[in-house]
Amino acid sequence: MNSGKVLLGVLAGIAVGAMAGILLAPEKGSETRKMISRKSDAYAEKLGTQFKGFIEGMTDKFEAMTEEAADVARNGASRIQKETDYLTGHKKA
Image 1 (cartoon, rainbow, N blue to C red):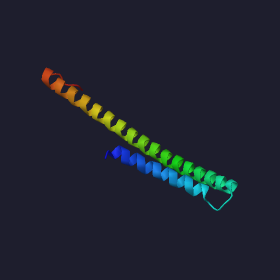
Image 2 (image 1 turned 180 degrees about the vertical axis):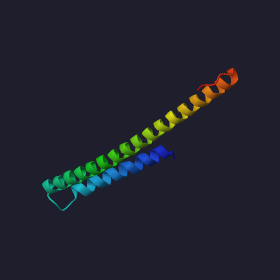
Image 3 (image 1 turned 90 degrees about the vertical axis):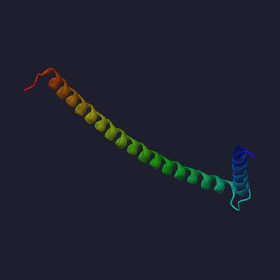
Image 4 (image 1 turned 120 degrees about the vertical axis):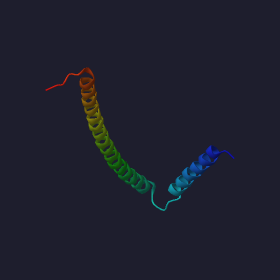
């Protein structure tokens, strides 16, 4: 059996189970909706916090890599200049 079909079946089963749990819950519908709303808000806040942390981490890594690339470029340009001066017999003061 195709793994995509298995995954789709598992996800469908989870969704059906969640819906059945909500429909058969002992609380009133209004209480269930409030509970779902609170949980979704909590999940959204947690996801937002994790996403913010991810973005900050990626920004830090990007800035570090940018600085490293600038250092490599400066060092490379310096080495090229030194080699050019050596090969042409000119020395910079």
